[in-house]
Length: 240
Image (cartoon, rainbow, N blue to C red):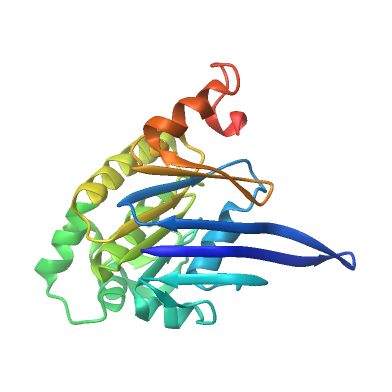
C-alpha cells in the first residue's frame, strides 16, 4: 500500500516559489490505478516523486507503512518500486537478454526470458539477442521495458504515459499487455495517462489538476464524469 500525506512540491520560478503539487493526500492500495488530469497539472511530477527521482518540499510518502520520503530512487527500487519513463532509455551494447537479467537481479535461463517476452507479445527468438538501440520501435521498447518490470516482480510498478511516442497499432497491443498484467501481476500498477482506453481498465482513477487532488474513485464513478465534461467529439486528452 502506498500512502501520500500532504505532499507539496515547490520550484523556484523567476525568484518566486511556484507550487507544482499542493497538499496532495491519497492512499493507493488497488491493483490497477490510473492518475489522470490536464497536461501540466502535476501528474508526472507526482509519479517521479513516488519513484524517488525528486523529493517533496513537504509531506510524507509511505510504502506499506514505512516512511520512504528521504530514500533515493535506488533505495526505493530495493524496497520494491519500479519506474518506466515516457521515453525508454537506450543502452548501447546491451541486449534484451542482458537488460531483463539485470532487471530481475538474478540469473535467468533463456526459457525464463522467453516466457517473459512472450507475455508482452514479443517473439523471443527475434528479440532476445537484439541490442537496445534505435533500431527498435517505440512500441517494441515499451514492451521490453514492461518485460523488465515484470521480471523484477516489484510491489509497485509505475508507468509514466506509456502511450507517448507510439503508433495506434502499438498502443492497441499495449492495452492488451496491461490487461494481462492487471489480471496476473502481484502488486500494484500505477499508470499516468489521459487515454480513455487505459482509464477504462483501471480499478481506481485519481484526478490531478493544477497540482491539486480533484477526485478519487472507481472507474465507474470517475470516468463517466470525465467524459461528460465536454462534447463527445473531443478526445479525453482534450477534455482534460
